Length: 410
Image (cartoon, one colour):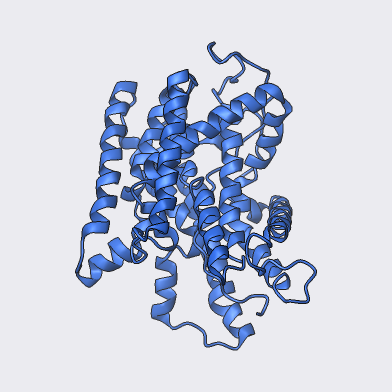
């Protein structure tokens, strides 16, 4: 396989950069005095890093050997667990924007302008990079024909590739100024949005014989439509209204979240065993549109948040480490596929010292090495890009992040 062999893998967004904060332990029943003037919650940085880990894991697992049935079962289950972390980015977007709106009360026009610079501009830049690498350089180096104009348009309409998540975040940003500010009103909106997302996901599985345009939109490219993710976003906005209180880990909340996460994940895995899975409608990125992803991923999000809080109380420096990685999360998301595509082929031949193509679970240690090297190289690429003004623009930054710069969170 050539180094630049095309591998169009779906992914997910890593929303935005964040900034540093020193954290001290706190009792869960008290108001958080250490939030900082901007109301930042360090748990969100930890969740952001873990969700980014899920994104990279989905792409690394695509290189795993799964030619025999036992290996395929390992792949399906590990891939599903990694994908359940991905909707956390939409929830995080809602929480952060919900918090920010309560603090800044920015005019809709100013808010949208900042979001366009932070999300739309990087999408344009990296769409150009993606198309150049995968639609021109990869075919040339592998001796294949360059894609025709209709195929190029289809590639862009598909995200392109993992960049579709930026389009989802942009859609959420566009509708955010329409959200009410009161907690009760946001609760009503969140309930309606969850019902809408759940209903659309069920209807998408039930509708058959759709006309070609609707089939293209609702079957092939549904994962790019914000309406299929709006429940996560609206729930996040509601939680952002008063995150300290609404995300406080009471006994019944923890019990309920564990039960929902366990039941939803168990049913998702069982559906693939029992052949309940509609592979025509739920393959690739469309897997996120399974109705059980909404309760399962939402419950996992709050469990990760609570776990992050407990971990920070035990190891306060964890907050600083998480902030360092969270500040790079958007950039790592944008670039990680490129080092992965360079390293992955070198770890496939039989004579290679580390072989990710061996059947799972034997290749798990090799995949872990590929995972760590990919993250390290992506972080190094982000650091290099940040040294140049054009690199900052490509990463959605117009300056270096600063402590207490609340615009970075938004």
